[in-house]
Image (tube, helix red, strand yellow):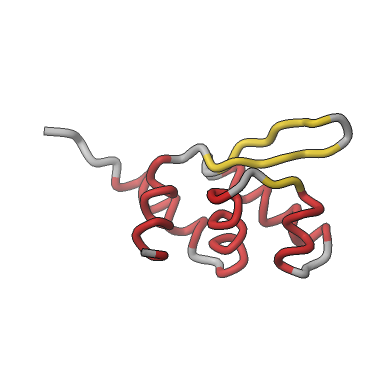
Length: 89
């Protein structure tokens, strides 16, 4: 039987609990995006988007990839993927 890491799941849920972070993560899950694209999608200042991305990165939900001067993000956490897919149906 697999051991469930409840602490890890709890941290993932906390990070996704904010509506903007959930929306960002759901969008990135559908299509890897760069900061400018995310900013346009959520219509928030770049600094606010960067703060949310930082929290998602710290939680291990997303990973950054540098593309020249741009920073692009993708979802790497399997639990986060399952949670979003389950909620979005």
